[in-house]
Amino acid sequence: MPMQRYVGQRLYHLVGSRQPDADEANFEILCAILRSMELRTCEVAGQRGGVRTVRDPSRPLTNGEPIQQTVVCFCDIPRDDLPFHARRYGRFGLGVCRSVVAQWGGRPVIYVPFSRKSYGTWAARFPALVNSVLDGLDRFFPDSSDTRSKIEGGPAEDAQEAVDEASSLITRDVQAFLKFWDVDLPEDHPENFYMEREWRKFGNLGLASCLQEIIAPPHYHQALRSILDSLRVGGRYLIGEVEFTSIPDQP
Image 1 (cartoon, helix red, strand yellow):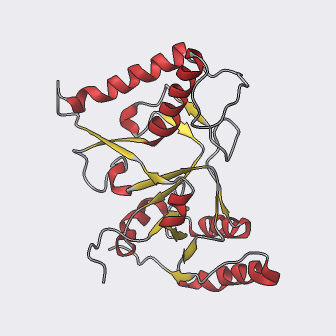
Image 2: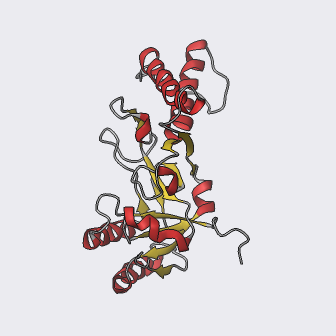
């Protein structure tokens, strides 16, 4: 019996962010993910996978985040509380081992609270401060085609390289994981991002080593089992035991 109900060893990825109620479309998305045995990143500037970030100046920070990034996303939500999450992301998805995601660089986002009711406080000022920093980086250190390479973690060879590394680190490891949210929004508001308890990982995630659960309404389970069985034939993928579950409708 876990001591804390609100934490678990699995992270969940539900596939219906565009159409949470479109069961057939979301079933096909889940089938495609399983056949590829890979959870693929969103597309950024025509590219999937790898590490890529693009700032979107038209998107206000208070909408959640300031940049686009090639990440896969998960929610760190206990299994029994997924019905709430499913209202936004649908009833089809995967449960993966949290430890494996962490080993491949996945981690929780950095939630930054603010309140539209506050004036002169840190919470009111911080979004503008972040915007100022991002504007400065865009202005003075735009993306370059510099092909210099060095050992990761090694000392910088000159001031420009040090600045480039600092800018890259801020973008990749801080900006890409920021998530702003309005503390005054009700739990069911579509922009109450805190309720997602989000994790992110740059690059695609292979599923064979971490897939633990497949989520779908019961009448889809047999078709999904057949996909897994076909992937196991001849040792094509060494997939462990996978639990099949469904999310009950929320009243």
